[in-house]
Length: 343
Image 1 (tube, rainbow, N blue to C red):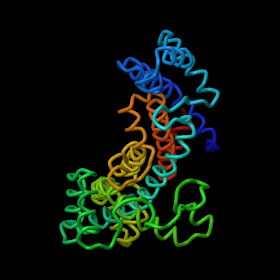
Image 2: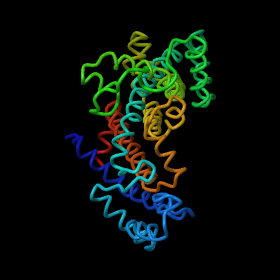
Image 3: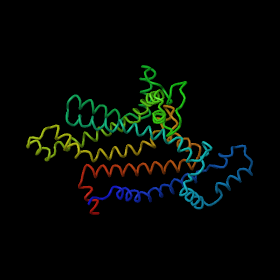
Image 4: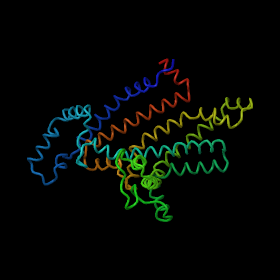
């Protein structure tokens, strides 16, 4: 009998808990040995010594760092991520404000970059050394060699300044009101409230940031898919299939594609996991109030609690993506699932 999916996921999650705890310890200690006074940042530089002392006591800043971490850990297990000095609200409230934008941006990026990279990689491998292969490889080389922030500025210059067909920054056109906050991601909220004008506007505004953010990942997926497909297409079992008269389409999509997807899934999983923490340049260039940009501002402002929470969330996302990749491996390669059961 195959292992139940929920058992598999629980085992993977339990294995990741020590990593998350270790990261929380590392980041907490690193951020708290920085020579800056959060109480002074919280109260302002004109605050009286009595006020600073009271804040120190409230935040346990005068306690040993191990005691501070204990207080943080107890609060964390109660769902309290602390207070953000940068937005003057709880970290949990800040996450609810900023995370949906970054998460939506990442999901839209994966939705186009992964399929596009796979399709172009298959075309490139099956049309080796032809025009389509040359074009695909050129796209991949360009995407892997150009930094994301440079590509973002480049597409702004082309499509906004020169062609004037797409908006520069933000999520809505001037004069449009934000939709009712449900998920706090404009396209989703617009659909849920039936505001198709806002939906159209927000999706148009996201075209350039989503493209710029996903182009590098698409290029990496293209290269990995092409390399894996070429290796499989020249293997002995494919030659046997051809000798038996199996059509090239069946060989490509029924056999070779599935056999070649292992390395590609790994690349997609790693790229997807890195999107949550890698959107800071995109959010800054396109004027999007996202989680990565908030975390960047928190680093500059010594907002320790936000930095620790950001690190934990990124680690959790990586862990979830690894679980998804493992499940996908088990789907494309049944022997992996059997091996897991034996262990």
